[in-house]
Amino acid sequence: MKKVDVTILGGGPVGSFLATILNDMGVSNVVIDRDLIPYQLPRAIVMDDEILRACYDHGMGEWLQHNTEPLQRGDFVGPNDEVIIGADIPPVGLQGVPPVVVHYQPELDAMLRSEAEARGSTVMWGRTVTHMEDEGKKVVTTLDNGETIESRWFVGCDGASSWTRKFLGLQLEDLRFDQEWLVVDAELHEGAVVDLPAGVRQFCHTDRPFTFVQGVRRYRRWEFQVQDDEDTAALNTEQGLWQLLDGMISPSVARIVRSAVYRFHAVIAPVMQKGNVFLAGDSAHQTPPFAGQGLNSGMRDAINLAWKFSFITRGVSTEKILDTYSPERVPHVRSTIAHAVDMGRLIDQLGGRVSHGVDVESGYGGTRPSPFIEAGIVVGDDARVGHQFWYHPEVSKAVQRDGASFVLVTEVPVDIPVAFGAVPVVNVVAPETLGGAFAIVIRPDRYVAAVASDVTELNECAANLATYV
Ligand SMILES: Cc1cc2nc3c(=O)[nH]c(=O)nc-3n(C[C@H](O)[C@H](O)[C@H](O)COP(=O)(O)OP(=O)(O)OC[C@H]3O[C@@H](n4cnc5c(N)ncnc54)[C@H](O)[C@@H]3O)c2cc1C
Image 1: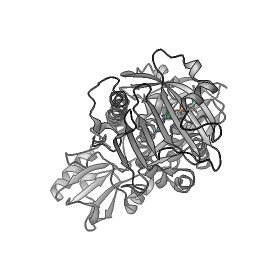
Image 2: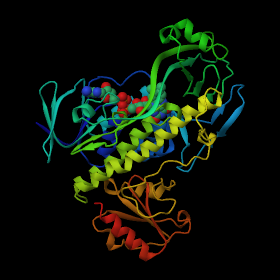
Image 3: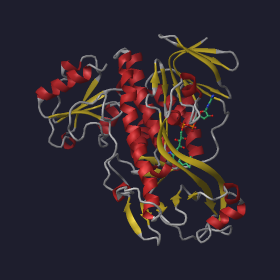
Image 4: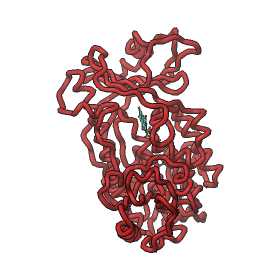
């Protein structure tokens, strides 16, 4: 019987990313996937700066520099193609990387699989699971070849129709969005001259809304809303596709790489953990893609779990830290999906099709507040708490000390307050990042855990944070 810390079912992007960063944190793992190679059709196309920063910090920056491109702009345009809301995206944002990049998902998935293997994961491609038993102190997993694996935890990263979720009997809550869209990926011919928008644009047209995304290199993505009375089979033919693309591209400038009809829906598992078994990625939540957040959210799940597993295997925390996974991730994902759903509704609304009363500020570049960690290992009501800390190279290094550590940012060097107890904490002096605070406590996933205005408050925050480990 093979013994590891974590069994991961699903070597898609979320499972492979989780395996990769667990290796960096010294947590042994096995990844199982029924497919010998990654899924070959592109789905996710944009990656945000929180995930980009995490990938850079875990040594994947060089690959990303060569295989992604910054997204330059996002717009919602009305029936006459007039910009209703939109913004240019700066080349570098608060995480020291572009705020959004585009990628080609099959390449990203392949890179993550090979990083997981190269960094020490046991990979089992072409295998699946027939049974899993959570025995309290360990999980015993049986594979389709009869082999068994004993692990401390099991993570189901097995996608939308998750075996793990069904095996556990965890339900998905319907967040009330359900539309059919036809997704078309095209590749421009070398040297082709086209007149297409820069970045991502939601065409809020009255007869048929559609999305355009400028993909990496010569890839371009269109997503067309299917209308109630339409036959998707007729739309999704060579002739039907070129008709939809008429006026934008033609066979003389591009080839169609693939097309598929998707149901864009919004669902979430209100609980992402049962005992020693966890859900991460599409197994736990699915979102309409208007905000480009499905995979980004799944990778956030992986980051959230990874440092908590590592704290336990290093003996600096008890298992109770894992009770914070669902309370931290579920509201965050819920809020992320709510924004994407509102974007979908806004598309219909701006096209004059139906009024949902959605604020136009939910569009690209709008002022809608971003999700944050509302409950869990966060203390106090400073506006920075629960949000990502801005990029600082020393902080990025320090959060990876011994695999994963908290960081205490101060104006001058300080002794780590004893109130932190067993929590591993590294002091970083960075007065320029304090914004008037006496100290900022940053979690290993670079979320702000607490902001203290004086030493007394810091000691109180430290004592509070120590209760979670
Ligand atoms: C049109 C479209 C556009 C999108 N755009 C974006 C975007 O721009 N940005 C973004 O962040 N997200 C986007 N997404 C969402 C993104 O593609 C998904 O969220 C992401 O692929 C989920 O990754 P995952 O690893 O959780 O699941 P998957 O990618 O589905 O991987 C699951 C893996 O588990 C394996 N598996 C499943 N069941 C078993 C089993 N029983 N045994 C063994 N192996 C199993 C599968 O073979 C697969 O490899 C988009 C999705 C669509 C459809």
